[in-house]
Length: 315
Image 1: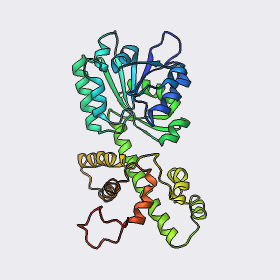
Image 2 (image 1 turned 90 degrees about the vertical axis):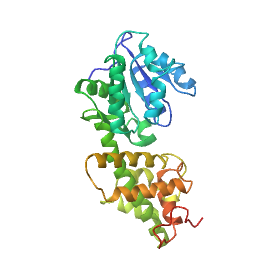
Image 3 (image 1 turned 60 degrees about the vertical axis):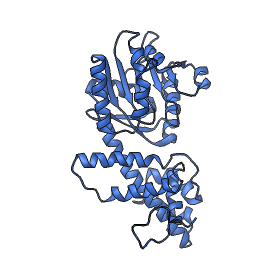
C-alpha cells in the first residue's frame, strides 16, 4: 500500500487530541510520514521540534489537512472542536476539497452514525467519517502494535487503513459504526478478563501461593492472554498506579449495553461487569489502572444484602 504522504505536495494529515493514546500515535505517524499537523489544548513543543506543524485551533488544523484523526475522549469533545468560529468546519470553508474525519475514540456506534449524517448534511457531503477505535493501551500505541477497528465505506476505510498502518494493524470490519461495535466487544472481553485476573490473584495471595510463579505457569495455558502478559507484574505487586484508567470502562461498557439492547441480546456478564466498574468509580478508584480489580476484590466485604452498594468497603 502506498504511503498517503508520498511527496511534499501530498496533503498533510492532522491529529486532534494528543493525550495518553493520541500522543504516542502521533509520534508513530510523524516518524513514518515526516510531517503532520497537530492540535491539542496543551502545547507539545517536542512534536514541533520533531517536524510537526502546530495548529493553534481546530480551524487551522482543518485548513492544513485533508484527513483529521480525532483522538479526543468522546463525541461531545469532538463536536465542540467541530463547531464555532475556530472549529474544524470553519477551517474547511477556507480551502477546497473534502475532509476525511477519523474518529479514534471509543464512542457510541449510533452516535457516530448520527454525527456523520449531520456533517454530511451541513457540508454538502464534503466531510466523510470513518470510525477507528483502537485497543492495546499506551504500550501498544508506543510500540505501533495497536489493533485498529475500522468502520466505513470501502474507499474511505482503505484510505484510513493506509494512514493508520504505522500505529498497528488496521482492519475494515464493516460499515460506519462497525469499529465501535468491535470495540464494545473488545471491552466486554477486557473487563471480564481483568476482573477474573484481579480476583484470582487475591484468592491465590490469601491462600499463600507464590503469585509470580502462579501466573508464569498459568500464562502458558488457557488462562494466558495478552492482558495477563501486560498486567502480570502489576497484579503480583498490587500496583494499580495510573496507566489505563479503570473509570473509562464505565462509559465503554455502557456503549456495549446500548449495542446489546439494539440487537435484542440479554447478556449475562455485562450487567455484572457494569456493577463492578461502577463500584470501582464509587470507591474513588476510577483513575487507577484496570489492575485495581485486585484491590477491589481485597476490599470488598461479604455482602449478604444485595441492596448494599459500593460504600461497603473495608478501607
